[in-house]
Length: 149
Length: 447
Ligand code: HEM
Ligand SMILES: [Fe+2]
Image (cartoon, rainbow over all chains, first blue to last red):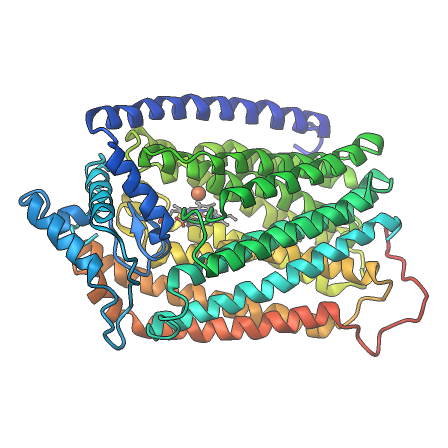
């Protein structure tokens, strides 16, 4: 190999191959974007869901929790928290329970990980719950394996 | 050092080392909060500490890359930098942006996406910093000798800037958000950053082993071909469960498994070059860091990456301490060690001293590497237990965490060892060694 492959040839293979794989990647990504848009068409990202996402970001929830497995691993997975709180069976009950949970922090229990109090208004809490509900309805190929997240 | 303008690298190396200490310090604070949750809880919550820890890492690594580029590009192109003034201005702007970000974080000002927490204006300032850098470097390369090393380094740095632009895109649709978030995160560390890594390692190997440039540069192209041919589609290993189509499970599994190849090739190639080169370069510590970088990158990115990259396995391990274990060893091996390698090589030359404090530097190498390795083992055990309890048996997250206390204590211990090692490294690099210092006589490296 060292005799037959010249530096110029190696360089050309690099540029050509990279361009090829990048084009394939972009094409597959474009196809996946259509699926992501289809998800939003079937289950619209309402203004409330969008507002919830921004509240999620404003308080950097992702730097303690994970959301569909990404984020910090200090606090529970929230991609399916709606399901874990029984939202599928009793939507109103799950909403109240989630809001009460967020209002009740920090627990102040010695030796337990603490979640800050974010002082969210009633409507902001509703936005957040809408966002978490929307997220739980994404087709995640059945991830996570258990409802524990 | 042959060119005056190479000296600007010192600014960047100094800034990088300061942020390195801060990053590891915040890491040990986080490790403490994990075992003693009430520690600091009322003052600075975990999420703020974490964004400082991760952002400091990214910023100092980039700062080190800038410094490395300013150091090696004049030597490679055989010409002075286009503008040292611009390089210094760029440094202060970057440092100011980083400091402003940290102060903002402490006051709760951030954008709140993992790793991309910088507020919009700081993101834009980073783009400006990148443009200043790219302009300066590109102009230098255009007027000078063109080598494969400068080519690849330039491509890597342009890629870093281009993919960072995706951080500005934050759609309301979480699925789209996640897809393009990975265009920054994955296409950085498993794409363009690897080009930077390969080119800097190639530069160091030429200098340290004396092997023929033609040979090194050809292999540089071969290795980065493997990197991008696998790493681009390897992005699929993050598209398994986020609402993207199921074909990514095949594409991601196959291509990301192949991502191990370039890391393996870098190990084999580096050791082979050292063996073949047979030069007895006086800077032993720089050689140790270079070989250590290739080796630890192989284990951290290659072995620990493969551990959880196949879709059927990732289904269980996704977002557990297994991920944390891998993240730490991969960043340390590939990018931290790379930076320390080039700094260990360049500091004596920039300061016109013989290689100094080598023994201490090598102690720093072994202590820090042991610390990070042990931390990785502790987190890996924690991750395996967590995966079983939470993902197989379905136990509640907080109950599972209570079972992991022992591992978190071990991790904190390893973190403290790491912190000590880092302080030793910084001391060894910055403070002149008493015995070895030569007055005035510039030490000329074997070319
Ligand atoms: C130097 C190169 C690499 C670095 C710095 C790196 C770093 C990281 C980091 C920080 C994460 C966590 C991201 C998050 O917060 O969600 C991650 C995730 C991941 N990495 Fe790497 N990585 C590297 C190379 C690799 C390679 C070569 C492979 C495969 C062979 C790999 C496989 C994975 C997988 C599968 C995940 C997702 C884990 C999960 O599902 O939670 N990585 N990597
Ligand atoms: Fe990746």
